[in-house]
Image 1 (tube, rainbow, N blue to C red):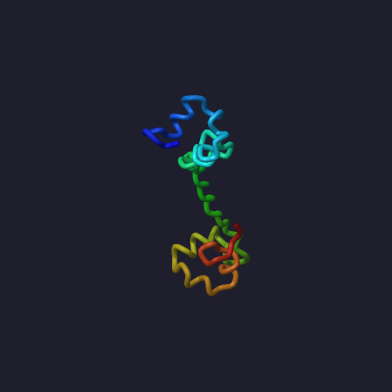
Image 2: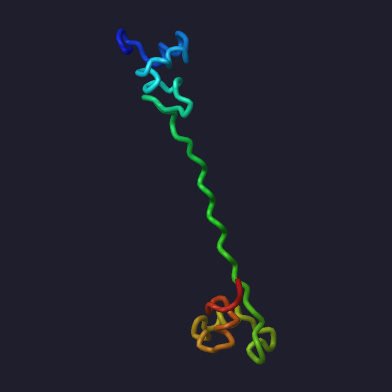
Length: 103
């Protein structure tokens, strides 16, 4: 079937599916197979990757009692000592920079 430079393309051009009755062509030529199989299967189709989800944003909770007096926030304590303040339970539970707050 492949003599004299004949390829699946040759048989497809000369009558296509009529030649698929021959086992050698049916097994080797893509145009003979409904699933696109054969010696030269179509290239794989790749889907675009899914973009990563944006990171969840943490929201600081209101600071209780004197911790939040005079307009102080978690940002106040983060800017003036940072993680050292996380030893205090109120800030540890309320402030994102300490691992508290809410998502």
